[in-house]
Structures are given as C-alpha cells and as structure tokens.
Image (tube, protein in one colour):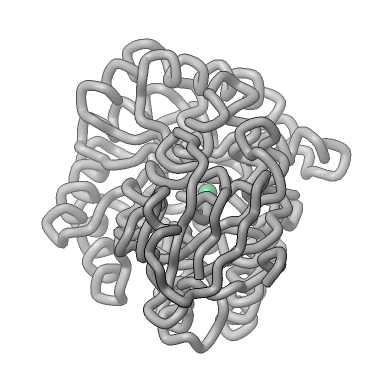
Length: 391
Ligand SMILES: [Zn+2]
C-alpha cells in the first residue's frame, strides 16, 4: 500500500511525500517522493493534511500495574491473574498507538508476555522484557521485585533473570514514591551492590536500567556504568555533567507524578506527600538535563497510580510543554526510545524497517494531542486500531 501527499514526521523533521509498505512482509518498502513513480498496481491513497509517523515507543511501562492507587492492591493477585492483566494492558497499549515498549518487569511474567506477543498468541506492542525489579530487602518495589542483600546476591539475581529471558535488568538505586517506608532522596543500595548488578548485566550482554530520584543515586549508578536512568527527579549540575560524560540516557517519565498530583485527593496519604515534594523539582530537573543536551528517551511509567495504559502519548506533550521542540519530543518517543531499549528496526520511517505506523488527522507538530487518538495504528503493516481513511 502507498500513502501519498502526507506529512512524514521522522527523526525530528517533517516533509511532504509518500510512504509504501508491504502487508505481507510487514515492512516499509520505500519512503519519499519517488515512491509514487514506482509504477506498481499497489493500492494508493492520497491523504493531504494527514501526518504519518513511526509508532511510538514507550521506554518505561508496567504491564503488571493498571493505575491502582496503591501497588499493594496488586500484591495478592496470583501469577495467572497477573498474566491476564498484563495481556489486557499490552493490547490497550498497542491499540493506543504505542507499537514498542520496554516492560519494566513484575515477578517473572513479562518475558512470557513478550513471547506470546511475538508468537501472535496475544496482541501487544513489540516488547523488550525483564523479570523482577531488583531492590534491597524491603526497598522500593519489593512487593513484585527481587530483594537482594549484598553483591553476591546481586549477581545471582541478574543471572536468574537472564536465565529466564530478561533482555535487561532494572534495579532500584533509591527509594520511591509509591512504596511505603522508602525514601526517594536516599541511596538505598551499597556501591558494591550497584557495581555488581551493572557489571553482571554487562557480562551477560544485557543493559542495565535504574530507578533513581535523588542526585546521589544518579551519580552512584552512572559511576557504576548504568545505561539508562529512570525518573532522575532531583538531578543537580554534577549529575547532569555525568550523564554527558558517560553517555547515559535519561527516561524522565514526566507522566508519573503528574497523574498522582491530578488525583491527589484519592492518592494514598504517603504517595501524595512524596509527590508534592517531587513534582516541581522533577520538571526543573528535566529542564536542566534538556538544556545541557542529555539524551532523553520518552517513557511514561504507565501503570503507576492513575497513569493508565493507553494514555502514553501524553508524555510527548509533557516533554514539549517543559521545553522540548515538538518534533524532537516525538523523536524522543520514537527513534531515541527504540535505540535506547534495543528495538532494532523500530522508531524511524526507513525502507526495510517494521511498518509500525501512526496515521494522524492533522499536523502532529502543530497539535501533539492528535497522538492521543490517531486515525489508524499499524503494526507490521496491519491496521490494529482505527482505519486508514479511504481504504
Ligand atoms: Zn516504573
């Protein structure tokens, strides 16, 4: 199929042109003006005023959580129940226009969800999966995580996960907003534990992501060689400098505190108090990193309190609202996110890559809210929600 006379939004730039893709192979076959002269008998649809862009890639989602006010609401679920919840959330995510995600883990279910998606047994985005977030005993996320004590146990935890098919590991350097009794400002892990986690992940050929709020936590994890820092809520100048020096990507997840602030009346007392402390500083911290030129990948933390699956695209609006050029904000949640999480062949409009596409009715760079409700979402060249006008 060929879509012509559209605005192509790719790698932070727009141009008018055409895109051809093949439903059989599921790949993009050509992009640009010459597509139209291909002379084939393919179906061709002219869509002036529409934008075609790569499907969004969310670098940080929790299939296991569904926006409950407290993570503790999920703790009593059996693995079977949780697997069904994850399958539902994966479908919602894809249908909203997110064609790739990095799933941040819960018990050991995410690699199986990924495999079921890859095999076509359930519907969902391309998924990069891990198992359990690694945390200190009683630390942030311990309800669904793998608790460790000491560097030897840290290595063991990484090995267990890789054995079960994890493509990266995630660990909690600091406390968090949503886990009672943990302090977001404080470095929870010892240096030896952080070093062991990152070193073991790299030995096993997987990348290491870390949850961080306080600046000291960011510095400790970056010093150890971590690949991505999630949230980065209280970054100071020195921490920002270290991101640049060590070529580390920030996944700011601006959506997460926003949704708790908007629902502050119904949030738990502890998460409301911590979020008030976090919210303003988080935006400042994002601005500081952006201005310094830190690589930023879009991720929502979808699943955390009131941060529902399917609303992921609002992260692009937040990044733009707090200083990013709109086309660059889209790029952060397509090309940059795909590269960061290791989804090869996603995030750009290029011949030979996956035909994972959004078709939006209007100019996306003029109105980012169009991303919340695309006319059509395609994965592998097949429409998975909405429809292509005129088809
Ligand atoms: Zn998270």
